[in-house]
Image (cartoon, rainbow over the protein chains, first blue to last red):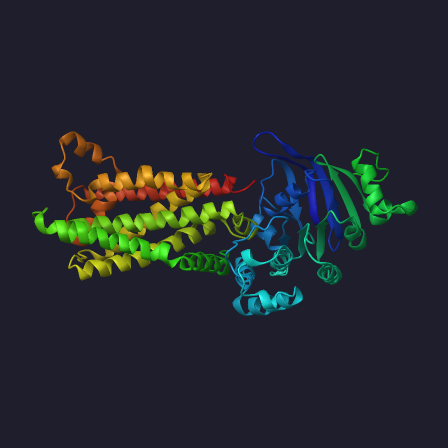
Length: 247
Length: 256
């Protein structure tokens, strides 16, 4: 079973802007998938439609075989999202943000307490647990977003620019943790403008431009002939034809 | 029932209550001080110089209206600010990505608004008791009326929170609809004192029925047919709930 199946997905915003047009994509269970593209290409829109933040204009999206519209509650239980924006009650304390979100996903009280402690420690947030979100630095805020995404132990982890503003040590620590989670069978979708990060972590990569997948393949296909991912990415987003698959 | 996200719903209500207790002065002290002043000035000071209305003191006559106004205002403010603030800082996304049904979202918002309104109602009842204005003739109807008013205005608050595109719009309904219609709904006077034309127009003001039903529940007098009042309550609750659920379903102004 695939973790994500997107078929002929289109998203048109009010006002007529078409952000994604006819995108089809499958992500295998247990895969570490990199979704790349320039700003405004449709990456975040696609993520928002998978998670329920945005509505789908046409086409279908399934998560672990569950339709995200028809059976949205079951689909959402599978997903943990660390969004690009800090979409959180800025007056809440760090532990409250984790506690509330675990509760929303139905995690019982005792399990919640253990899980929160584990994540506070993992993301080096223990000393900040009683601080309001608005009083944290950018890097700490990003860590809270990551911890929040993982608090209900989801099968599909979607990380939209997860390391923006995060210091080097924490970034390396996060990479190690994401690898561990992936080895445990979690599926990870990563969008990032740090292409070295994508090159290091992802098994498969898709590049989206103007709302369509313009390149899709194993990481090896993007870094063959001594090219780095960044070079291949630049060529593709500047219009050079991709020799691999786009479906 | 097993499909209900009980832990999620409880957490939702817990978070909403935490939000209102964070700003206790604004959510509890302000309406109680305001209610105290209304009761003291209109009921106690002026009321002593006003003759009996429908056989009761002016203090007893205005008290139910003040109570109803505060219940509806606190319910409205609760959900309107919760939904609007959630949209503004995008924290509403937390609800959208969580496994909540639209009914659970509605129940979470309305239940927390009802708790807030109940706390304020208890405070005002204590003030009324201190001024000797507290009478509850029909306790069961009183609970139903308090709950119904709170539900109606928390639903209106959700709609305004979804519709508003700025803090100014958030206050528009309060300034131009809620306050004028409460005052013109017989809060401080009997509609029998009005010219016939104005009295007939007042019968189309739903706020008149909220105040009149509250007056019946507390001091046992009413100026409209009770069945009409009950129908107004029922129609508004069913109509507004359906509208909110539909708008949640299509994601109007909450989903991109």
